[in-house]
Length: 366
Image (cartoon, rainbow, N blue to C red; front, side, top):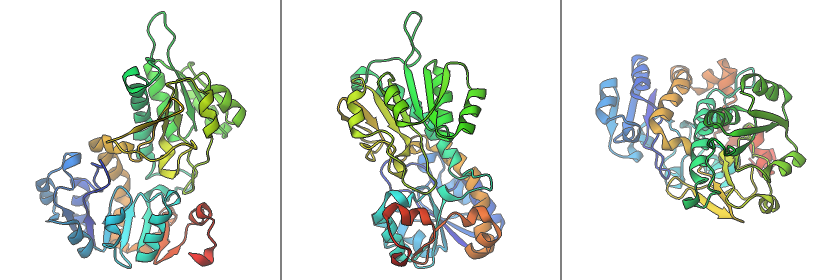
């Protein structure tokens, strides 16, 4: 199979779909790999690194799309890429269709085979290709939140860890999944007081067992959320519904109950956000303020640490990429139930129900 690795052109996205080590494995398996010139520079990989691994370098993104059977990316295609995608071409990347009707309609129109990293699902319900980026985003959420709590950027002026004689900051984490646990771990490491909410008691028991005493757990409901937002300095949105739009756990009216300078980091922004006032931002312009509450909702947080993120992503995507290249998408998905759940749109038809539900579409319209 011919595999193409284009340069990411989303704002401030420095990750790349595959490391030279991944290219080496594909070439070893007799596949051809085309890498767009400069695609890996943001992650610390030169054209020469890819050539030494066996890839051929192409000058333009149009050439990569035109000459490849399968495109391996990090982020969803943006508007400039839509017309480059060919009917029957495999796209293996993060899509998050439920948060973008325009992207969904574009991929239906192009009749590509869209396999989404974020819906590949193991038997135990875990999402192996989303996990490493969730780990990065969860840890980054505390870094960014701590920064935007500083007064010069309109935060409350709170040091999360406190100092002797001064109480530490308070962090509220919505969701005890991968993002939530990693955020709680980082916040606890800084010395902050952490409250983590979830509706899954099994997850809360796990958090209770592994976290230090200054991380407390509570069942998630509107009453408890309204209670805690009044007293916490940093709120992390880490709620995920597989392939579907995130629920609005914090509504616009709740902002008025928060202390001025409270910071919200909504990691669920890719799926529409779990805060009603969330809108996607970029690393170039990451925050906005509503009712004196600082919102940080960068849609590609791990893109700020591309070396770590690209390495972590290729570690988990490569086995699936190899399977798709070796067997073709149909045989690969027939043999691998986890990969089959990654199929979102096939030749113009939506095959993942959560997308239909997100837009209220009937299957007949898809």
